[in-house]
Image (cartoon, rainbow, N blue to C red; front, side, top):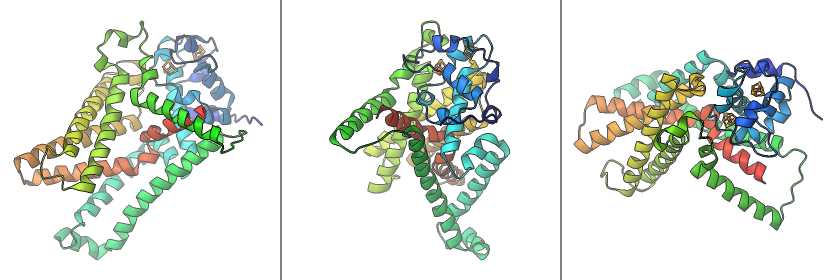
Length: 369
Ligand code: SF4
Ligand code: SF4
């Protein structure tokens, strides 16, 4: 049974939306959106759901994950109701509702909390790294007050909490999307699952629907491909994936400090270039507020892009320092910053903007099924 929640409109606004209640349902946004399909009347439908307080419909909708936040609909809305910004907000709202510890909700809605948790984590991780060699001065001083086991358990607990929260979040999302649907694990089901996986992997790998956002009338159609939002997003995504693979290979097979010509190091360098390029351009667009979408940047966006940029730049710094054999204090500090930021990205993966990286493909996969 459909449940209406009158307080939903105000709650959604806390995730950063414009005043979408100004909407008078003209349908212009749906008409201009290049991604809306025959049976998925968005973003107008999502505006209606939000105004009517239809939480279940929002959390189970496919449309939420079909939008790439190009902002074309917001730019042309006669009521300045910000339908594109609302779509981005609803994704934040959905992730916060799937994730059950309440941390994501706090991080999206409460900026001081977001900053505080990031700083606390940075301090704890720094101490953790300083104590990896238990015979150092810092380690001996720290262990007088905080036993090594406590620090170690905290680190393991944080990683476990992240993994568990992501898993629970996906199960909750599945319950919304799959409600009222009966599943029989037959050959037909698995065939469909393979086809759905192929479809989603193809979409995520090439962002081919996102490319369709560049309509002839949009600002981006006049820009070079490498400056368009879909390409910038693509470079950040593949840059991060490439770095994750390269780091894992380095960790598994060899000491990464020995040569830059090792295949995993070459992969890391190419991936790093992609990620630094993408995050630099994305930050530049947001600083310059180049469109309404970029003007509507929240702390969660700044932090996410800033962390990716810093992780990439410090990674290159270390690459040069290692190649030159420069064993200087500054390089040790940069190494510390690099590791702390990379670990924060991983620990906060399930609770930050980063979470869209796994909710979107999984939601699309479930809907394809
Ligand atoms: S959000 Fe704007 S463009 Fe879309 S239906 Fe409402 S008033 Fe029209
Ligand atoms: S932001 Fe772009 S993709 Fe999303 S609903 Fe608006 S026009 Fe469509």
